[in-house]
Length: 239
Image 1 (cartoon, helix red, strand yellow):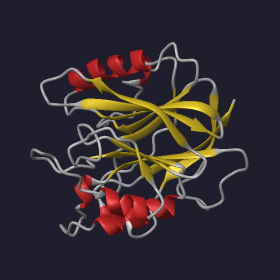
Image 2 (image 1 turned 90 degrees about the horizontal axis):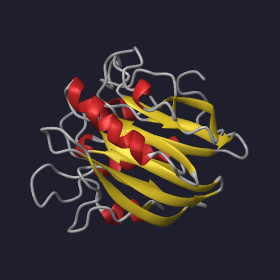
Image 3 (image 1 turned 135 degrees about the horizontal axis):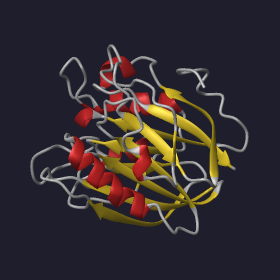
Image 4 (image 1 turned 45 degrees about the vertical axis):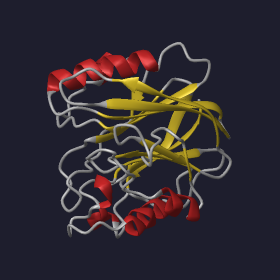
């Protein structure tokens, strides 16, 4: 499970999920280029993409990644935001190929900052799959409280569950993992900042119904400049 191997070579019988903080499509060159963000997503060859900072910051929070461009490139977006937003609290979920949306919803998260998570129930080649996308807070206490809420959202599901997002956790010790023992967190790989990754802020976790056969950080151009984060990805199969 090395860093960014032959990423297009997806193992048979697997589903590729990616998590990417797109920083409102503003790159390290301070230019807003949604088409460049989509170029990075295309290079991931993912079936499902969980995005953070997919909307602009100020109300009415229009989509930073326009829906018409998303659809033109073969993706479908779960309608999580409404009113011109791509997601909720900046969290969005895209899918394509043999994946279809069955249900969706929001998960309010505690903390002083306005934070929230989203979930989608998908029909996938692996069967029913619940994907939870989140962007956790900047303080350790908030992250722990928010992870408790996410752990509850991942419990008692009659389907496989994946949690993905920007956890904002710099520690390499299992600070958040202990809060969600029902989930297996893939080993941390540095994804931030994009030009010289030091922090493993972006993570993917899965329930015991699944196993990861490969995972990594996507570094291919223009990922190094399209956002301040690099995308992370995982190939999942039924356990």
